[in-house]
Image 1 (cartoon, one colour):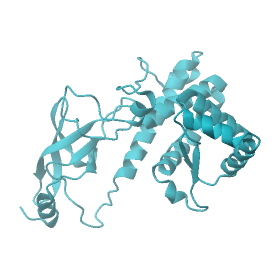
Image 2 (cartoon, rainbow, N blue to C red; image 1 turned 180 degrees about the horizontal axis):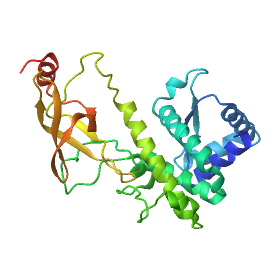
Image 3 (cartoon, rainbow, N blue to C red; image 1 turned 180 degrees about the vertical axis):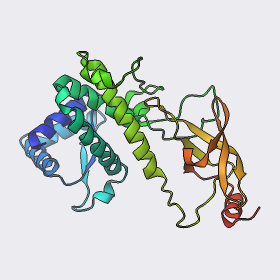
Image 4 (cartoon, rainbow, N blue to C red; image 1 turned 90 degrees about the vertical axis):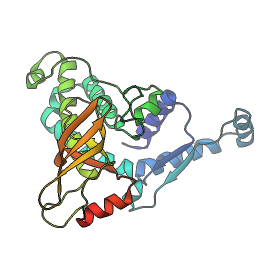
Length: 273
C-alpha cells in the first residue's frame, strides 16, 4: 500500500467511523508519507481559522503517534493480531485466491475483521445467564450488544466449486475461523510438555473453552471444581458457564484470569493439599 492508497483508506475509515483523535502505527513508509502529505495539506490552509472552528465544535486535531523504528514489539496487541491473521490469510489465498473476485475478496476481509473483533475483553458476567455477552471490540465499534454471527447454513468443501460466490466466501471464512481460533488460543497459553512444573488450575480461575466450532463464538467459564491424579496434578475441571456446569479436561481450557485466592493458588502450585 502506497501513501495515496493509505490516505484514501484513512478517509474511508473516517467517513464510516467518524473523526479520529489518536492514530497509532509503526514507521511504515506509507504511514510516514501520509503524515508528511497531510502536514503539507494543513500548511496550505489558514490554521488560525481552522483551529478556532475546531475549538468551537468541541474537537481537536488528529494526533498521530508512531512507534520508534525497529520496535514492532511496541505495537503490542495489534502487531500480534496482524501477524496471526496475515499468516493464515496468506495461506488461504494460496489455496483459494483464484476463486475470489474483487467483491468476494472484500467480503472475506470483512468476515475476518468480524472474527477478530468478536474476541471477548471482559469476564464479569460470564456466569449470569440473563446478562449481556462479554464486551468485545465489535461492541465498541458498532455500539451494539451482540456479536456478528455468520449466516445460517452448512458450508463445505463443495462450495468452493459452486457458482454461488457468497457460499464460497463463507466456507473460506470458516476455514479462517478454525485456524485463527486455534493459533490465537496458543498465544494465550503456552504449555511445554514435561519440561517444567506449571501452575495447576484452581477454583475461581476464569478460562476460555477451546471446543467451540461455531464462528465468532467464544465460550468463557469459571472453574468451580478440580480433579487431581496421584501426583496432585489437576487433570480435569468442572466449569460454570451461563448455561450450566460441565466437566472438561485441562487441555480444553485456556487460563485467562487467575483466581483472586492467592493462598489456594500457591498451595496448589507447591503440591500441598
